Amino acid sequence: MNKWLLRTTLGVFLLSQFHATAVSAQVTEKLFSDIDQASNWSLASIAYLNELGITQGYDNGTYQPRKKITRQEVAELLVRTLQLPANESTSVLPPDVRASSWSANSIQRVQSQGLMGNPNEPFRPTDLVTREELLSIFVQATGAQGKGTAVLSDREVSDPVSKQSIETSMEIGLLQGDGQKLALDRPTERQEIAVFLTRLIQALEEPKTREMELTIINESTVRIGAFKYPVTDEIQKLLTAANKQFLEGATLKVALTPDYKIQNIVDLTVPASKKNLVFDGGDLHITGNLIILGDELTIKNLSVDGQVLTNGNTKTSLVFENAKIKGMELNVATKLTLTGTTSVDSLTVAQKAVKDSEIVLQQTSVINDIIVPDKQLVPNLVKDYSGNQGKIQLINGKPRDVQPTVSTGGTTTGGSSGGSVSPTGPVVSTIAKIQEVAEAYQLPTQVSVRMPDGSTVMKTVIWTAPKDVHITNNEVLINEPGIYLFTGQVEGISEKSQLKLDVRLPLKLQVGSENSGIVVTTPGVSKTVSFTSQPVPEIATTVNHASYLLEWTDENGSSSDIELISTPGYTSYDVGNGWLITKSDDAAVVSKETISFEVKFNAPGTYSVQISAVKHKHFD
Image 1 (cartoon, rainbow, N blue to C red):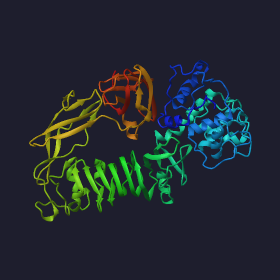
Image 2: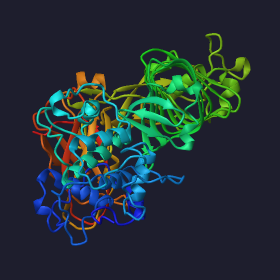
Image 3: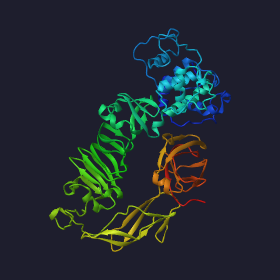
Image 4: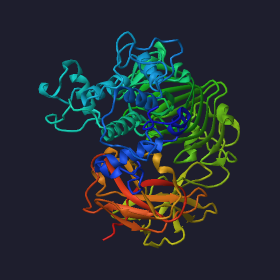
């Protein structure tokens, strides 16, 4: 067997289950005795494929980076990288491939997938592979399809049939250049295929880190972004004719198996164009968030570990049937019907959504905790509250020991007649927001108190700040980003009011999975970390700048001993509970951006990072 490739099938199967999407640049280590012969641009990719076990060099310790690659080696690499399955039926080998050859099995596998010719023709196993041929094979193997944004000169390709494939490979980043000097007819070197394979793996895994549009090909294959992906049997249950209209054009993040099948859905966003549709999840398990922008939708038979968010622009109507939901936020006015066995652990109704929202509880549906700006709103928010209050366990995190007043026909009555229950004492309204003034935060001087007779009065409140935070003239200046809980003593009321100040910004952050569980065995090792930040529209127009709080922890949950040693374009500060990075030029946050920085780990351990976008007093 060609020892430059993987030595055992089991090795690549196990390693591929744990590989990270980011290139691990082990260029400081002497991986191979002849690594100095490799170009600098290939070193990280060679190290990355070595980590995965896809290429391990020769027995004499060399890699031979400039040696040309053959067709049989490409077949072997395709099998290892894409985990192509074994052919269950007995296949005839091409006439020029011996059954005893180390590459026979891989050649059978690639040809069973319709790649690299067919068994009735010579395979030419030792022929060299040009860059043009290699990229065409990669595009065919993954079903890659571009949008036509890359244009290649006719002079650059020897085979007009491959022109579209080469343009696709340029568009998805496999081949980089200006389209004029790509040398496509030149045989591919081993160092070059390392770079191509690394880019291919990263492109294939992109749906794991960001949402991309879904297109259904058939009952077993979908397209996400540029590539075709097979699906597991579990996900295949979703690809029914009834669900196709709902899923087509939705965006999603997914988890993938080692052979690039879609294993489950992490995040799913239903666009505003989806209206008057029914989606049957068939016991689908969404491990992240379900974001709904559409209207008049019925969603049934699924569970959501993250949040169900209604983020549309207009009032919407939603029905959930036989669903299990950890958290739900109504950010727009919504008629929400929960039916069947649906359960919601926590349902939050935003201030702007309260007025025109309605919650309908049918059959055995339940809400463990309903969170509203004022608990007095619940009776009018929940339809037939007197008959359904037993389906709500908590209001704003507290038991329903004192029931709010129920409005009947626009009047309020006491006692048990008329379906109304009055509170036995004054109730301090929940304060939903602290007013931000310049770089400080203004605490309210008065709060609304609901009296036993149903009237509302304003009472003075005196605030107590959490540790290490100071209040001056009811203003709070935050120098260290975090989440702060203020306690207020209300005039004449024994019940204290609480107010949470969260100085994180609602920027959409996507932190790659490679930043969780970073294993460090040698003190002083450094890693490159990157994440994507995208502001919501109101942030882009109102926030002068954003900073990012990086909170590192080890496997025990303790603060980690790390240093930021390179943050290009950003200034970094150690703020005690983490590191803060902020744009050096204090530019406004106006568009999506990707931030990369280098981290030095001073102690062995397994590290993870939590990244939050924050606004705070800017450091000069």
